[in-house]
Image (tube, rainbow, N blue to C red; front, side):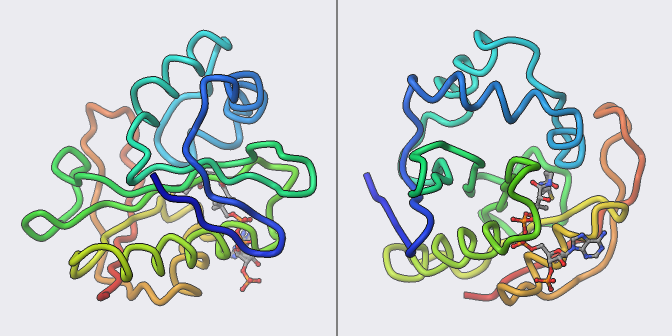
Length: 173
Ligand SMILES: CC(C)(COP(=O)(O)OP(=O)(O)OC[C@H]1O[C@@H](n2cnc3c(N)ncnc32)[C@H](O)[C@@H]1OP(=O)(O)O)[C@@H](O)C(=O)NCCC(=O)NCCS
C-alpha cells in the first residue's frame, strides 16, 4: 500500500468511510460524464464503487485535501484492454477526476505528477496512455503539463453512449 503527498494533497487508498464524500462529488453531473461515467445516484452506489472500481490500493488513490482531510478526487491507472484506445500491449490507462469546487487550482496536475513519480520509482512500466473527449480540453492540459504527448484521435465505442472524438495522449516513462 502506498501513499504520496505534497504540501497540500495526499494520495491514499480509498476507504469505505469515504462513501459520503465520494457521493457528494461524484453525483455532480459536470464531473463523471466528462470522464465517460454517469453521475453517482446514491451513497450505496458510491460505496460499491469504492469496493469494486477503487479497491486496488496499488494503483488507485483518493486525492485528499490535507487541510480538511476530505477526498476531493480520484487518481489511478489500470488495464487499458476495455477502453477502446489504441494502447500498446499491456500499456496501462491513466484516469482521474477532481471535484468541481477545486478545479483550476493545479490539484489534478499535482496528483498526476505524484503518481507518475511513484510509477517510475516502483514499477517497470514503460508508458501510460490516456484520452479525453475533445470538448474537455482541461484534461488535455493536465496531461500535457505532466509530459504526455498527443498521438491522435479516436472515437469511443458507440455502445458507451457517446460518439464525441477522444484525443489520445501517451507518456513515455
Ligand atoms: C479535468 C480535471 C481533472 C482537471 O482538474 P484540475 O485540478 O482543475 O486541473 P489543473 O488545475 O491541474 O489543470 C487544469 C488546466 O486546464 C486549463 N483549463 C481549464 N479549463 C479549460 C478550458 N476550457 N480550455 C482549455 N484549458 C482549460 C487550466 O487553465 C489549467 O491549465 P494551466 O495550468 O495551463 O492554466 C477536472 O476538471 C475534472 O475532474 N473534470 C471532470 C472529470 C474529467 O474530465 N476527468 C478526466 C477525464 S479524461
